[in-house]
Image (cartoon, rainbow, N blue to C red):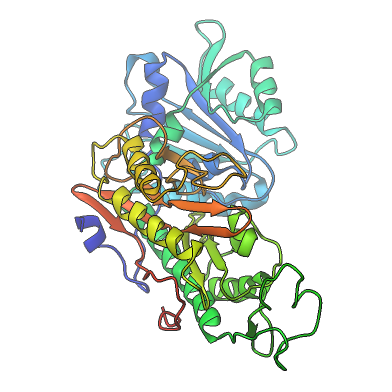
Length: 454
């Protein structure tokens, strides 16, 4: 276990301050011989949320980062200005400015409050009737002299088109940068704190669903406890649904039980509680309502979002009263693929290697490792990064190597659209010497109620 993991908060401990190092943005501006960086978005824009830690309204804000030293490389007076809605100034000052103050950092050359990354922060709420792109352009006019003609401004590729138009009309030449996406891939200890806490809530939700499945009753067609409806006794030979608390069990009832636990733990389900049963378990994003039947796979993929914007992500698969057929063979194969993938995780390993080992293991068990959407087999990558976006870098099917601080899912799975699906997923932190599973949860195809107190 890494030192960061050993020293992290417990379930009720105090979280370390959450703040973003804007140094990589400043470095990107210098490296591109540019004049500034601009990002525009609202509370749903994950890159702006990451850069500012400002959880503002659904009205656009703009961030301008200016390394005062310009192309000389002198970033001692680097400045970051957040153009926020006036009614949210106090929140912006708290989340963007105050959180960056660091008593251990030296004073700024301008005599301002010390900040952890040397980038002095400021909130501006003037001209609130103007578009966020216009407000960003006004800050550039104020802070950056256009001595070389048009200013060169870096921006994420996701900058809204209308904001880009306003900036360009004001004499700014935009250039795309991936500096923010690259910085987001490696998590700070404070970010890991948040991810670990949300992941604990995630597995608590899965534990509740497992307990409900374990408590459910198996009934057969014609049993007095069996409902006498076409849905309960389908003509395709499938068994009647399980019954729980006196009523047929459905994926929606399970989803509500999971989401209640998530809410009690202080996280939002964010519409991401995916539960499929039988054939719908082969649907990677199923949020509909299906009967849960004995002998069929029940796939639970839970991905809530915490109060600071970070996601959890975990998946387990269960079968009540299974017969040891396809679902058992698939479960054993996926378990083996998970172990093969984790065995490759360490700093310096190409990310694709992790996916390759999982796919090879599934192939060894007779499953197609390169199945297309809607086909039987392994239809997706082995994992992806998780942070303030549910899916971010690095990808375990992409280029690059694993590095300490990467937080990724490991989630092999196999599916048959006519039968069901099996997936097992954990969220792991790449450490200096291996990995840490951010919230352990047991494995087993037959549900028990032992984990409901998680």
